[in-house]
Amino acid sequence: MTSTPLQSALTSIPIDLVCALDYERLAPQFMAPPTLAYIAGGSGSGSSSAANRAAFARWSVLPRILRDVSHGHTRLKLAGVPVSHPILLAPVAFQALAHPGADIDSARAAAAVDATIISSTLSSFTVEQIARAAGGPHWFQLYFQPRREATMRLLRRAEAAGCSAIVATFDAVIQAPGHAALRAGFRLPPSCVAANLASEPAASALSALADGDSRIFQGAMRGAPTWDDLAWLLTQTRLPVWVKGVLHPDDARQLAAMGVAGIVVSNHGGRGLDGAPASLDALPQVRAAVGSLPLLFDGGIRSGSDIFKALALGADAVLVGRLQLYALAVAGALGVAHMLQCLREELELCMALAGCATLDQIDRATLWRQPA
Image 1 (cartoon, rainbow, N blue to C red):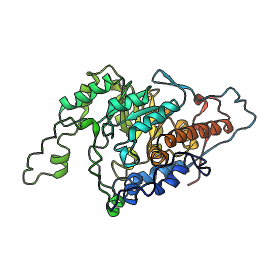
Image 2 (image 1 turned 90 degrees about the vertical axis):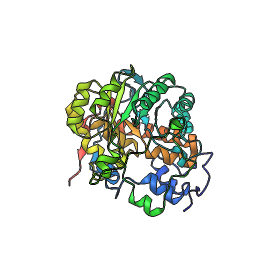
Image 3 (image 1 turned 45 degrees about the horizontal axis):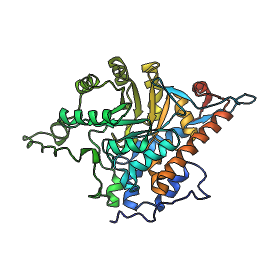
């Protein structure tokens, strides 16, 4: 089945594109159906990906009246660093699937609207190229490699490129293919390569499994990172290390005790364990477990009110993943920048009508839980 886009990306924003969510509506016009099925879906049946979106519908924002918000703003300090708003671009692999400009266009968009981009180990351009395009705050998402020497090379390259934080991801050691993408005939095109790993020697094949060994336990999980690997990483860099992919409060407590800079509450966009809870549902328990440790939220953001709800339930800031790819497919760097600006203004509107002039005024009391 073809992976050719149905039409080329736009060079201007159409008049009917009026909110961030519109990029999801328009994306099917700019992606081949197999590619769209892959990007829009999750692992397995896609239940966790769907749960991420459904979780937001269980909450409403309570409007308030007669509040003076004329001094309002969205500024905050994230792990001690001042930023102008709480919206970051999530690490997304193989962005060339959406647009040939891929991560370079996303980085340029982030720079245009004062946002931080987190580039992936599996990015379509190298960390050095993305850092140059970002020209400002840029974090690096690190997947551990089978050998520590390869992981160390990635780490040193990120440091040399000027990345200001490392986001270690541990929840996607195995990714079950999405049923919808398989049925649509999606295959990763040969042109889609992980640019950061192009110079790395190919990983040696696993030795043959013994009789009775599991392809999962003794196969795919043989070289999976452990707590010892994270402890090693923390000794190898002076950059702040965040850990992405946390849902269990016990894991969060252990990470806090180890001294990580912060945690990203995420179910990997539903691409990890199919059936894992929605990121938003797990967020309050993780916040309760770690006190004031900085928390980022990842999973289903489509609007400014979604951002507001995530902040009210314990996040300090949010990551935007799929919506980033939809905007990239529709209009390249212009689309991503416009999408981010829409999200920020939607958040400001939600804050104003909820009587919150600043982000620290957004808390659980600003939300209304919908009846079951």
